[in-house]
Amino acid sequence: MISIRVFHSLFGLTEPLTITVCPQLRTKMLFFGTLTDYMNCPPGFHTVTVIGSESRRVYLQKTLPFFSPDAFTLAVIYSFRGMDILPIPDYPCFSQLPSLSCLRTVNLTNDPLRYQLSLYGNRTLFSDVWFRQITSHRRLSPGKHGIFLSLPGDATPLIPSTFEARSGVSYTAFVYGALSGDTLSLLVQKDTPDSDQLPF
Image 1 (cartoon, one colour):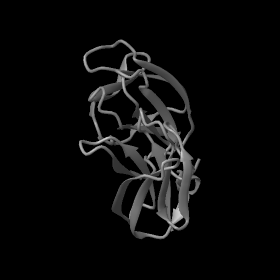
Image 2 (cartoon, helix red, strand yellow):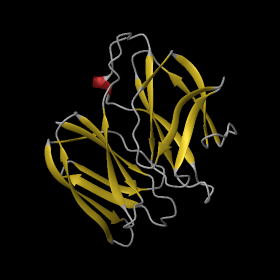
Image 3 (cartoon, one colour):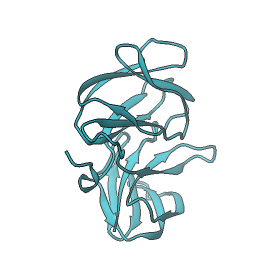
């Protein structure tokens, strides 16, 4: 089985969404900024359908392959056609030092079009992260970390956040919303199902 979760990153949409991927995976009343738990689907090609939970309007249907890796996050994002699905492959960071943690970031907003993500203490983890870009993992020491979002070349924090990194666990920092709409947000979540984490 493949593990799939869904992230609603569309700011400005007034109604919640219902999203179906396979008979085993159907989300209802999914609001902006909501990330579901992982649910199981058989591997193969599946048609992702995005429907307005209240209007019943079909916003999008898109057929996607789900084979390898064994887990995906499906992000509902804006595109030049109005709406799109960005499949994000979820996999553990196979570090040779399992005592460490890992972090990557995904840009789900085109406002700003690009950003940088830094640790407090002037360490830039990711620079010039463009819309729809999924970075590779960077290793981190376990413990509590302060991170912030900023525009390239500007050290002024736009969004400060903290998260607790655990040994052998991989995380994703999802950037979503819009700077101009005052909804720009940063969400850090474990990026693989529990069974896929590295041993402690």
